[in-house]
Image (cartoon, rainbow, N blue to C red; front, side):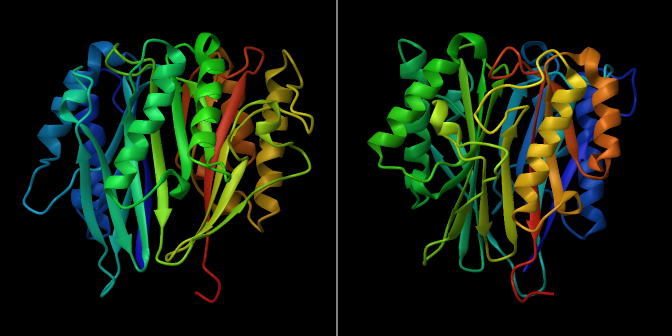
Length: 379
């Protein structure tokens, strides 16, 4: 029904500043879209990974506007996540990952935007919180980025962040039960991860949510400084219930058994494809313990073994991957990580690699991936 593009753009010129790098990234993205007869209106979500988000956010935002003129009649902006997570390429001020949906003949999707105002008056929230809504066949997909909350402490802020997302979903005729994937960025993960887990568990309990979304929770710097948490999400709905199944493997226990309420992965049968969302996965064993402490090579091996097992139980492998993000605690381990990912075939997909502390201080690496399979009976 549609062609879906998963695009990663890295700066090629080392001497450019952040603004000129951003212009080059968006020009490259438009070139990719033009090669399949599409334009910027087909972009449904984008994530910008900043080396110095506080210093470069405004320059990158203006650069994007110079290349992509949003606000055209009938157009809607993509869901955008801006997060401070330094790319592992030393010369990169910013990297871009984007998803676009390009309709095939006679199958044009409907693309709309929902927006709501929030109580916070910070620079980011003054523009309101927005989501991109895509209707393809009988399925509706919602993408949202940089959803923030407010509160007197970390628990209240994290809980309110989920409530803001819930209200945004309601504006699109959805509930949090439709959410299949979340990305949660914490300014200080060592300090606030416990509060996030308590808030998430309380929110899921209060709204009666039993099927946990696939998720990644990792350190990242939200912008502006007003907020310590940022939530991005993907939701799917249909007139009949969407076919969603939890992914599991004997190599991993369920994360909620140790207080982190997310699924290891979810399998979603959509109008256009079967999607496998694999949550952020690290060097964890079947009892939920961190293993191979102090060895980056052994941790990468176990991380990739866990991911491969989750995929294999769904009839998928590396050849079915379409995107990913890999988080590394120390950029000094980047050469070894790249070599190991290359040996496993990860260099053939758009896989952004950034520096980010993880949910446990002893963990050195984590990766998330997305794979797609054809729907049953399709060519």
